[in-house]
Image (cartoon, rainbow, N blue to C red; front, side, top):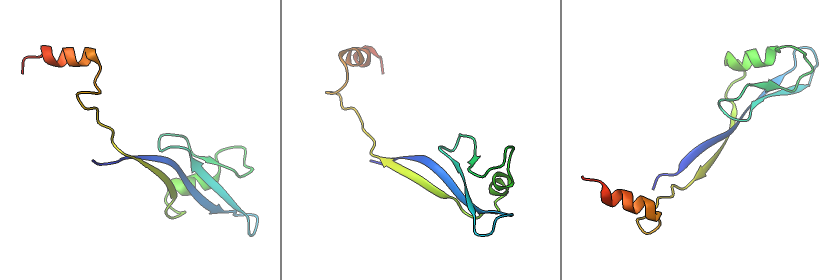
Length: 89
């Protein structure tokens, strides 16, 4: 059985352009979510643009794996068994 792989979060760490030694986090909780940055900028910050341009290197990606669960005939509901029996294959 092949496991199901789910990407949970994507995170980059970006250095501040104006504050020496300060680092900000650009992240998305899922691949389809909007990127967010924890810097104090009120509009779209440079850190998100740099992450999208690939200037921050590879992101940290949190991934989970789940085994594939397959229903056997004995676990199928009575309605599904009746449907399967009624099909002409």
